[in-house]
Image (cartoon, rainbow, N blue to C red; front, side, top):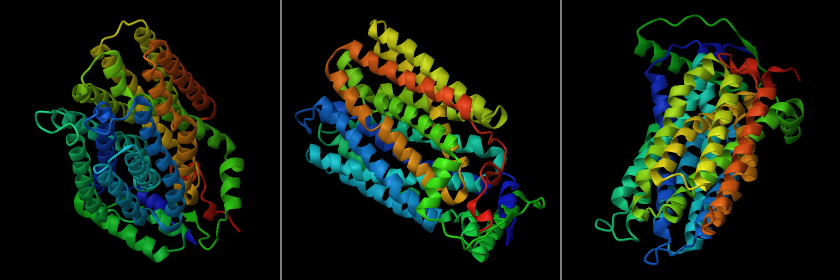
Length: 472
């Protein structure tokens, strides 16, 4: 059997249908950004005796609990997403995530909030696999890079909202010390319910349906998408002449899965692991403990830390938004290498200024804003790479495996480690952590330069031939 669905999807003109995808998928990351930023901003409040009275190491451990849940969730739901489809898992993973967020608002001690953070992470780990699979399979190839980066970067729109909200939520004149942060998590869960509703308008991936032998369902989904685009653009669609051979009844056991990922595509696997691990260490070390740096080294009141997180979030969003187009024009290898290397260089310079006491709280924030302008695009491109360079049948599982392995290696221990370093009160200890993060980013830049894959403006099936298109 032959299918022309990939060519039909890639030749579609941009329309309101695609904007709906951006909105419905990006909103999930925005809600995640809101909730994670609240957690980072309220770190100081959670140490207050009138609240949960946690210490610095426990604050770091909360972030590690969240990441542990994300690793487990990515592996479980990544496999389920490839088996049962993108759209179905959208609702399962987001529902788990929202349940964990709402439960966090009712935490009563360290162990309860750690458990609820782990549950929240379980859902968001599954979101990584489902959302990034859907993005690449539904967005035309010519725009895939920039749209992927923008959707992933929308996390920081929520982060901006969360950072601004903490000014009100953490103001003791408005909310009691132990109440404001709980209200914030409750609001995050409520907004997530709206995103869950928006998901109902996203169709199942016709690519996924086709390779799983559901040709009639794939044709119906594709015809519905084309009809929506024609109505919205008011013009006829260009013909699609390329076809792909499909052998849909073939089953892929774990032996074939791991042989494909780690033998046939071992260089790509190594690249993906390095890219994810490097950015995971940097982000989770810095973002989850930044409020602690502000309160410990710059004497910023805990209720004001959100003001400093706001420009940090702005830089993170503007990076993918403004640089995304160049990942499609200049190419993946050039831009991924450049963003990782520039972020590392700026991190070293900032570390030197920090250890020398040359920065104020505002100066430190400005430095982080510049660093993560590039690091945010780099981090998003890591997930873009994973979602492009492996066969479609394994795409969600590949995202899950490398997110899990990379985050486990680079991210889980990072918040706890930096929490301990910050708790020591020694700038030199924190500086060593910055240097280690920069070294990982340089290694990632070198790996991309050596093993990067040309995927810009190319059909997914050309970047990695589907297993179903190969004869038995």
